[in-house]
Image 1 (cartoon, rainbow, N blue to C red):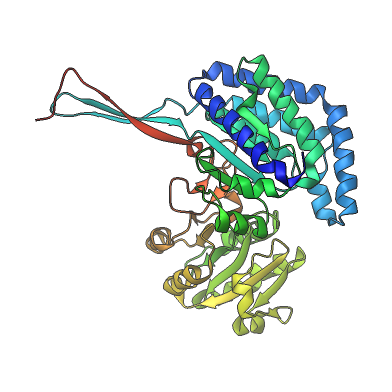
Image 2: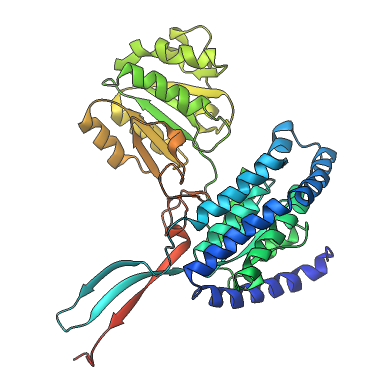
Length: 421
């Protein structure tokens, strides 16, 4: 099947099956969808030995490709991680079903009653790298929102994802839903990705999850609409009216809680009028092993600070590195963010509500915060349950992409014989 000549036929067949399944899912009950997820969780727990055996093959494959230790860790599955995947399926089953929700309704003077109602998007394509848990997370979220999904996982996680997918299919079948509602592309051939990006008559939305090269390729080549963000170049701005204790705690958490996630802060901006706070902010970062790269003023505050280059302001480190710059007030901070942010998440630390509101209103990023760590940029932390990713675009979905963002809407108009004059 890995012969490239077979890829177009393979993908068209998968697409046709997904379209058929999507029509059935659109009218599936919440009880059916939840049963499928709960049964899949049960199947996962029963398959722990088989999944771990498959994962061993993937780990060997990854090591042969000289993957880094961090990448191998992302790939690794053990009993605790598989249990966490199963619990994730159960958590999604317990979330409210968005399909059929009435978003708004109103009556017209002519007696027409109009409702805006949530409906599934249709067929979603998810292209991802390494992490085998995405197979379950993405499949479950799409299913709960009433969508069929085509999953194209990373070559490194091929065997693990195949086993996990089998558990999802078992859940679908036990719930009386079409097995084709969640399909995994059964090849490592990269031509399958290129084919997915052109399936405009089949796939309604593409969601890439992975590194910059993957996301750039999808955004550049896709003829299908895309939910994506390239990078998380997130900023924290410390205003002259900041509370120093909050500034210290928030900056340490925003950078160092988990440095490898897209909501980790990469640049700290400090008002020149708040320069006296700088030593207190930097010390716990240094103690936690963070490398600081700063402008001339920041270097003057601490001789451990390395010189920042122009490239640093546009870099997503995903590591224990932070660039720090002094700015002339909130307007200068907003200008810097507009020039260098990736549109993901920014935070202001201040006790001045007027300044905070200005920042919240003028910073054009998907998530803008006041006196909070950028590490809260997460669907679960927003009370939305699981998410399929963070979208930084401006059309349809923006910010955490959860169940509601995996739906569209239609208008239902109820009349009593009205005709338009």
